[in-house]
Length: 124
Image (cartoon, rainbow, N blue to C red; front, side, top):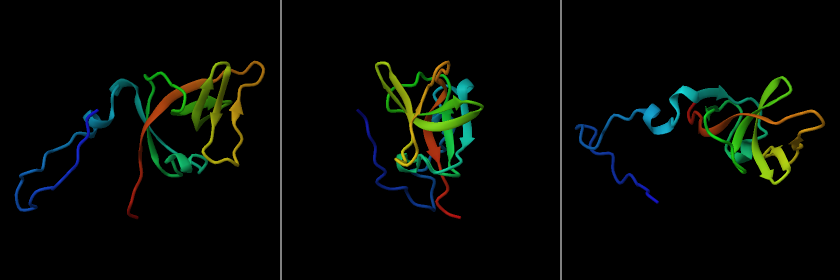
C-alpha cells in the first residue's frame, strides 16, 4: 500500500517542487464512462456527499456492497450507499431519517454508476 505526504511545496519564486497535474489522469479510471453530476439534497451528507457537490461517477465500474452509487429509481437518479448481502439489496441514505429503498414487485435496481470522487468548494 503506497502513500505520500507533501512535506513542502517549494519556493513560490521558483518552479522547483511544482509540477503540472492533470486531474483527468489522477481521478478518472475510465474516461469514456466518466460523468460529473451535481448533487441535490443532504441525505448523503454524513457519507461526505452534500448538496451542491459535484460527484464524479464511473459507469464502467461494477458496484459493490458499501459503495456510494447513483441509481435509477422510477424516473429519477438518486445517490445512496449500496447495501448488498445475499438476496438483501437496498439503497441506504447516510441520513437515518431517510428510509432505505428496496425494490418492490416488478421493480429492478438499476445502478447508473459508482461515485468515485466528490468535488466541493471550500471558499465562497
